[in-house]
Image (tube, rainbow, N blue to C red):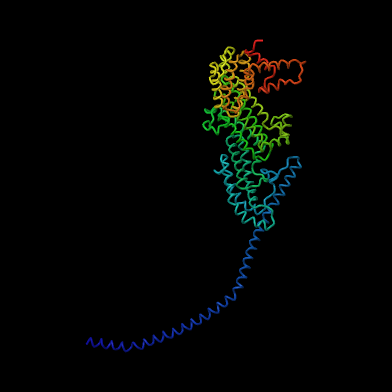
Length: 623
């Protein structure tokens, strides 16, 4: 029974399904047709909309351009209103300042120049307003960090704000040249945007430096540091930032009377302290290049090199100052320091004068020569020549302690700014050279005593010079001369050694002529031995330093020529010289004594001297 019921239910359901499916299919077909109608209408509307947009696009473009122009005009209007507001604020202030200045002038007081207290008149031209506006945020930052109780506002660190300003200049350079400069060019302005920005930033630095300098007048260390940093800032400003030289920087702030006088005082104080230190140093009198012969021609001791380096550093510091009068004050300080150093060298020299051949004495002599050489070169330097003309034109001879004659020589460029100092140094050098050579000559003369007392009259003749040898009595003298020449060559500079060996040769020539030749009589053998000792032994000692050493021993060389003449020539020469003394003799056909002597190679000795030498010969024929 249950199965029959199930079958009947299945039959009932199966008979009712087809009508419902048909109805659903019909509904779906109607929906499809309706959707196609909607899609067709959508395509139609889309095409119409696209055509409308294409037609409206030119209007949209024109409207966009118009809106952009309106926006630009609106911004310009806001900028102009801002400028107008600034002008409105500026004019009452300027009017009030002018009224105050007029009042002060009317009371007989000094006139004031607002906003120019830290700037010279040549920089009083105001910045253009756009640059002033651009500087406002930088000015606020500068005053925020470097004024008041900020840690960055430190008197011991001026490089902080100086470096910051240089960074702002460098970072803004490209923007000012590429973005702002074209605008100024189009407006017909004849200014440089980059330079104007630098001018504005410099005004901040000038105000700050002027304030700090006045506060540091009683602190030598911090004052020196400020000066060094300001000089370095000026150098970088001119070189790295290409700031025009016609515009003032910050160096004029150092020329204010109190600041400049403090700078000079501190410069002198520190230089004197360094001189004390360099002269008392352990290696003060040794040369740092002593092991390098090519670099040690002057053989200057360390103290002299350090001193001249000190002077050069001072020169580099004041070289950039814009005021020749201030530069001349520093030059006067340098001259004073050189004279002070010369006096110190003189004091040390007197302590060492007991032994002029000592290493320290020669080092002092080298130091004097080195300083003199450098100052001579400075006298021909363009910078010092310009200062020389400035001293003449400004009438600053009192600053340098010059007399009327020296000023005239400066004006004609016959002298130099260091002429007086060079004269003192040359006098000291000359005195030391005389002392050195006299000491050396006394030592040689002591060694030469046996040679002076040799038996020149009894020496036998030797016809073969190949068998001759140096006189035994001359060995100590020759050895002493050789040792002293070698010693002087090692310890003296090249120029000083040239003077020393030539001076020694001159003294030795005079000594041998007076104490050996004129103090003895000579046989033929004695004269030959003397000539051999001189030409084969003494002259070659000096031949290491010149090509013709005999030219520095003219008296000895010519005396040997006269003493070694054969008998016949000696008789003829003696007769000629004696006859020349007779005023009444007939001169026709007779050669003059001078020409006869010149033929023999005698140019230095006079006729009377030759007669004396001829009388010293022992080998005369019996009358």
